[in-house]
Length: 172
Image 1 (cartoon, helix red, strand yellow):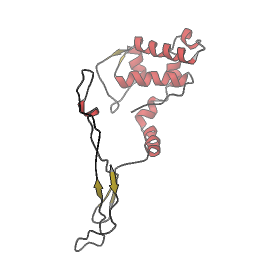
Image 2 (cartoon, rainbow, N blue to C red; image 1 turned 90 degrees about the vertical axis):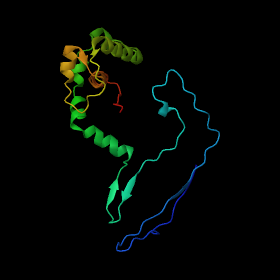
Image 3 (cartoon, rainbow, N blue to C red; image 1 turned 120 degrees about the horizontal axis):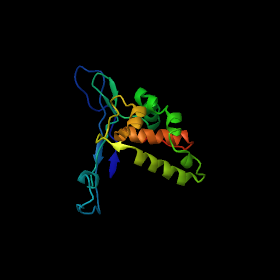
Image 4 (cartoon, one colour; image 1 turned 135 degrees about the vertical axis):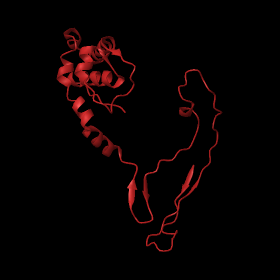
């Protein structure tokens, strides 16, 4: 793929002060294997070769800029500030204390992490909700009731691992 950056200020509209830039993109692909669908695929789109573009920013004819893309650092900092998530990640002590003492006493970190995972896997029943991150999540109630959404189960596990001193991060 070859991208040739366009020229600056070459597109004019009568009555507007700002000129626009142009972008020229030449695309070429070679040696792309034929798409073969397999039984384990959940989405064909994830496996088919394609070119996709992400709009980073748009400057309208009046000069107003709209940013559509952010740096990973910006996203990470702001994601952590989301009240719902932030509130849910502050329950480390509650979940650390729910892990059975025989698991906490395991000295080998990988073995202990596996046992913590197994504990939560056996403790919770999935309530068939995939994502409930936009709703009020009550992790303590989910733990007490032994049922929760994917988010509630994973956030409970994450809190336990953090409480036990592991470096664990939420993945979205």
